[in-house]
Image (cartoon, rainbow, N blue to C red; front, side, top):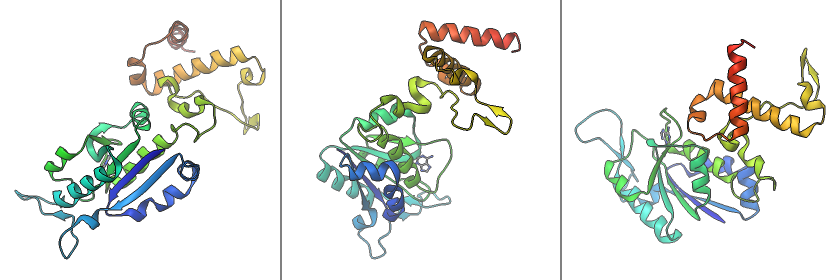
Length: 247
Ligand code: ADE
């Protein structure tokens, strides 16, 4: 059972996300528990405020450390030793490897902020910071949903037994090969013949080559970080050869 708790001023934002699809199924099956914790419960003023003006001036409001740190202390007390993760655009860029790392944890506490950022001193109380991309969201909540969604899919038993299903686009660190379903002919576009012939080894090689070609074209950065086996190297050489021949 993966125990996830989310510290946020908008607990309700997670309701529909957790009511559908894989997250709902994982919760129902007892493989996952997700609880939101209202950051305002840890405020100590009449207005239940969680933000304040930046010292030194400037626009925007900053998450004040008191409620966040009290919230983190509470989560640590009730969860044992969770990984405490601050959602910010300054964090480690989220990817499938990081999702796999998180899926191995027993407990994860996500700390979501609104406003222009967190008081720097909050960083002393967290284990990690995650960004879901180089853009600024209105708050960490939607980012936490992205991370939770990717993690849920990796919890054994949530998807089908076939572990390949879990990788999909990033199985083996490559983009996925093209997929087709019925009809065979759609608006003049045909399903590649190799997929209709039932020759499994040919299909496997075709798919691997397509995955490599697609990755080379769209995400060459993924190939740079990857060790290729002999078959992949051979297919990649073929692809490069075909490209120089203008095929
Ligand atoms: N909060 C605001 N923007 C974010 C981002 N890109 N990733 C994670 N948390 C955020």
